Length: 167
Image 1 (cartoon, rainbow, N blue to C red):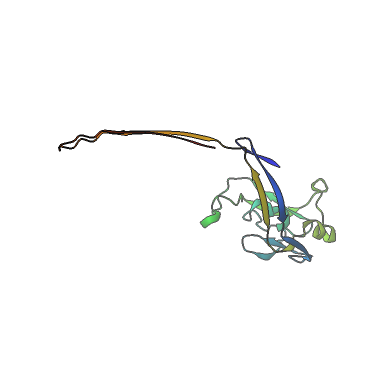
Image 2 (image 1 turned 90 degrees about the vertical axis):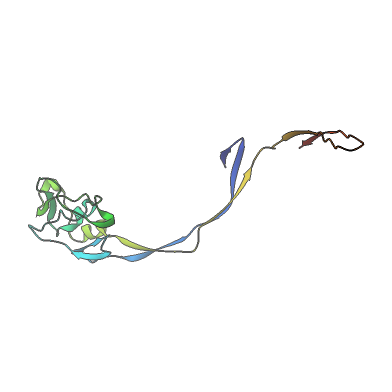
């Protein structure tokens, strides 16, 4: 239930949702990561690999096991033309060796943690809603008069008044 204003309310009387089926595999095999814009698996880079030109949300996946994508300082000079311009949050960075304090995960644990899975959606989403509003009353009054003169042997005058009430 919810409020629709004017003292009215709504109630969901029926709804159906799409069906989600999880695929039991990662989009990419170990040693690769999914690049959302390319819609493709990309091979992880080794030590010294320039990882910063990828969007920031990919940085933790770009480098091979035992490496991390570390900013090298400096200003973001990467350009991403087209509809993604200004949205990549890319900056100069390179793959360097992980230190113990970085808590880098590797191997099967990393694959399990970073695995992006595919889901299949099917069906339709539909909602039926009942909206209830309080009674609405209207009152209207109309009045008109008219005078007509004819140049003949007779003269006529007419007047009319009307009033109506609607519930």
